[in-house]
Each structure stands twice: as C-alpha cells, then as structure tokens.
Image 1 (cartoon, rainbow, N blue to C red):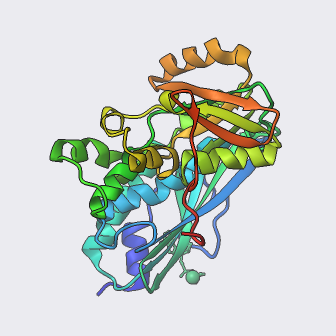
Image 2 (image 1 turned 60 degrees about the vertical axis):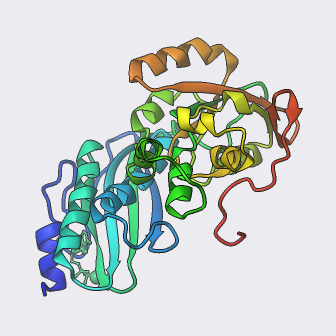
Image 3 (image 1 turned 180 degrees about the vertical axis):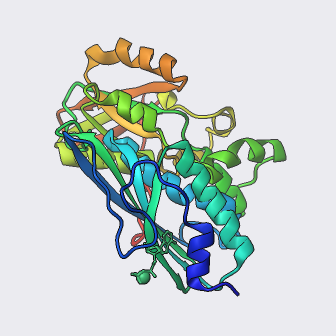
Length: 318
Ligand code: ADP
Ligand code: MG
C-alpha cells in the first residue's frame, strides 16, 4: 500500500500555472492579479449523501471540482486555485488514480491549479475549497436583484434529477432517455464563461445546485424582492418535456437540483445583449419570468398559479 505521501506526490502533484508555491510545503502561496479581490468557497461531497458510494471515481473527481467552480461562475469570478481534502477508506491506487484524472481534467479545462490539501483515512468524503479572482467591486452577488428585472436561466434544467431518480429506482427512464440525462448528473459543466460575460450586465446571480425554486428563493430573500416565473418557459430537455405532465417531473425540473446552471437577473433593456451573449457562447439562455416588488415566488402553469410545496433540497429538512 502506498503511503499518504506517495499518494500525494504521485497523484495530486502537477505543475501549476499561476501559483508561487503549490503542493509540498506547509502552505501554498498565491497572489491575485492587482486590482482584484479573492472569491473563496468550499463544497463537500459525502458518500451516500451527495453521491452513490459506487460512483465512478473519474466522474467523481470531475464533479467534486466542477461543483466548486460553479460557485465561482455564479459570482462572475475567474476560478484559479483549489485545495482538496480527501478522506478515503483505504489507499486504493486504482481509485485514487482515476479520481485524480477526473479532478485534473476539470482543473485543466478551467485553468485551476491544485495547490494543496489533506489526505486521511476515513469514510469517503471529498472537500474542495476553490479560490478565484474578480475585479474589485465587480462580483455578481445574490442581493442585487431589482423589481422589473428579467429572470434568466442558462442551459436546461431537470436532467440530473431525472437521472438520479432513475438510479434510485424512483422513476423509470428508457435506456436512450437515461443515456441522454446522465451526463448532467455525472459531468456537470460549470458556466464560467457566462459568469464572466455577465459582469456589468446581471444584477444578481446564483448557481442552481439545490433546485431552481430554492436557489432563486435565495436571490429573492437577499434582494428583498419577489418573482413570477412561468413553468413553460423553464428550459428543459426533450425527455423532461415529454414527462412534464407528471407532478413528480415538474418537481424535478423546478426543485430537483444538481443542475449547476446559472440563474440570474438583469434589467429588461439588457435582453438583446443577453441573447447576443447566448449566441456568442453557444449556450441556451432563457428568460423565465420577472422580479416583482412584492415578496414571494409565484410559478404559473397554463394560466394557473402552481402550488409549490417542496422548493428544493435541504439536508436538514427532508
Ligand atoms: P501537513 O502535515 O503540514 O498538514 P500534509 O502532510 O498533510 O502537510 O501534506 C503535505 C503537502 O501535500 C501539503 O502541501 C498539502 O497541502 C499537500 N496535500 C495533501 N493532501 C493533498 C491532496 N489530496 N491534494 C493536494 N495536495 C495535498
Ligand atoms: Mg496535514
């Protein structure tokens, strides 16, 4: 069995691009570009809670970094550095090698340096801290939404929840449907380029990790506003569309989570600019409703107001 230090040296030490001192010392040394502030966030993935214990390690490596990078995207920050605290039940080299490959595939795609971490024995748990930079004062926060803003969503929602429900045996998809839905669950694509493009245009933004309604709800609460959205305008794949007459699938779309798309608000007069942005990025951007002055979130479905009970995933209230 390799020692802790051999594992770190062999699997978690790779050349860095914008780091003064990376893995190997007691601390890493980094320096954001001048005129920038650091954006810092952490996300933990626990076996059995955030992923099924038999999840492919390569995909888990990708996802554990991707969900962190998604938080940088939501701030309009450029992801730069990450640390990785890893608890593994045993030093299984096949597992660690595949995990590291997935992690670094994501790191390379988004130009993130792995600069340190911790490796211990324990129940499988992956804790990543991400750091990025954003010009001072330019971060896109949750508290900037204004009454009258359009509410927008990137990409398509619901596929990850649909795939997860299938894997858990709670919903049944045909093989070709599962194949189409699975990538959203296993290999989320953080919307970094969109987040950067939205600086100066969006009033507020959040990434959708716990479900559209819950995450939009955070914007509403922190901005002291409400919103009215339309189910028919919430972007989703053909498979979600096909099953959308079922309440369970409506729930997956609105409250399923694990989407890692961005939900943002912007003034109405930015509409054309945002559509241009969508074409430039090759990314679907959909206007799903408006911010209102009155608190509360209203979802319309065929003219009626939907009764929204469960608005998203909350670890302590299930
Ligand atoms: P210390 O005992 O000083 O905390 P460690 O022995 O835990 O140091 O780690 C040695 C070096 O390896 C440190 O630079 C640490 O940041 C890095 N490191 C440990 N585990 C990981 C990991 N999973 N990924 C990246 N770097 C790691
Ligand atoms: Mg240590």
